[in-house]
Length: 382
Image (cartoon, rainbow, N blue to C red):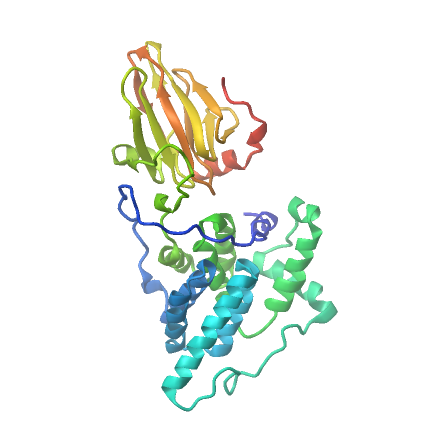
């Protein structure tokens, strides 16, 4: 990935997570996870700290701080992690994390009976928040270039130069220039924080590449992501997200999907109709609806955002109310946007000799290209 593209993904801040509810649908088995043996106890604690700050989970954050202290993390380093992640998770979550850190430190002081809490420990002098002054932009630009492997430019920063200046002068100048944490540690906690939030998937992927350039191995970033990421849970969707139930995990057709889909039969009489729900990033394989006469399929988007693409044509964005007619014999796929759940009704068009031919998966590169196009201008087949 080019440096300009890589860092263009890093500007978005995290948004609040949806409230968790008790699952009401059949749950598929969990994805396999990478062994955590590639992470040291300190690295594992840092990953848990980053994830808990991003999610605002104060009870888990307190336990992660304690595990970090036991693994050699210093109070000043813990403060620095909180300070850095405000840039990725927002001030409210960082302030809540600082309060949790203060309580965890006070508790540890009380347990050790003799050490002073609150201020930095001996050997950890207090540091000013801003020390670079007018040199922040110059130093931050150099730091950013070294971290990403080249100058970071692009249309996004041309469009919003204020963000470009903030990122260079403040994040990569004022914050990354501080010597409390090395760059490896800063990228490790950033990957963990972004991996903990489904809406920051693009930024997480960009930071994985930056982390790999700065001392975190690919095996370690895989382990961090596996450790903190939660599978997308349909039970967390708002109750009024769609009038169509999500349904049960689509186990019978799982081999033809990348990601998880859910199926709710609406009717199997006259014109069979099914509600199909896709988790973010889920899509079915390329496939063809064959028929001797008639046949094909009609898709009606009922919730979320997704895409439909015919072979050799640009993808069409689907939002609630968008309808796509798919004639028999047309090679195509459909699925969710990378950052959104997606649901459509699938209507089977009556015909004779109907059958489905399942073909190759839509690989990550083809999916990324299709969903990054300005597809809102593409017209679905009516």
